[in-house]
Image 1: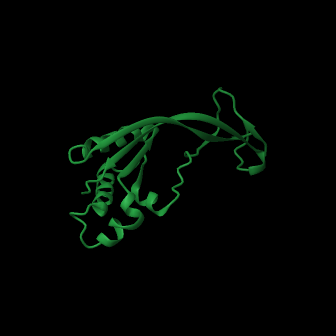
Image 2 (image 1 turned 135 degrees about the vertical axis):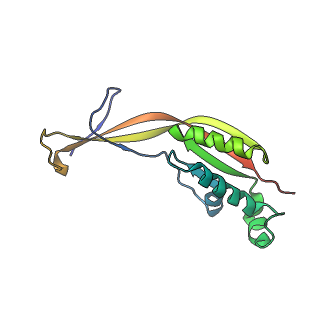
Length: 153
């Protein structure tokens, strides 16, 4: 198996897409960040984001006030919703949905991702791992980030 970095030409082979580095570091960051994919159902995303917003809202959330209103959770000011590539349109639609009741900020940018191509060097249809060549190709992908601000007093 050999490794190569691809040039800007078209590559024919099995395309394995790798996501951008989206590792969430802390527990609070995991609870306040929602990643939208192209296959994420819109209504499901609305409900999950609304649950996150309700969790940190003082008026609605009276039972778990101790956990989500004090300590490090007190520093949380907004919920982050992120989407890249094909999921950008759905992410922006979520922003428009929540704009009626919350303040929503929109940020855009680009991130570099790494694509992996596996090319079978033999013309036969064998699935032999040793005959596959792996090529990596970097590309830039647009992303959108929404910040939905909490309604805390």
